Length: 100
Image (tube, rainbow, N blue to C red):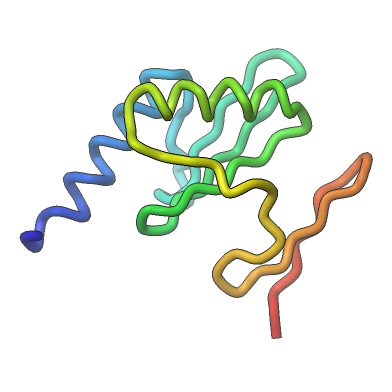
């Protein structure tokens, strides 16, 4: 893998995400957002790992299906730890805390 490979991967992923309705965050290039009406989907990228956040499981399933059509990927289920973060989901909120 050459030195430009990570940037090529990111560009390919960003293009695919924009093609399905996401827009890149102006504040953080690892964050992509998709909103329509009341629906909001957040997608975070770290190397080759992706975290999806939404209040709608249907939205998450739809994004996963579209990504699977373009990339070889699989869902590892609901995240509880990612990098140095702990996450928990309850009926009405998602809580993320820095791990110590």
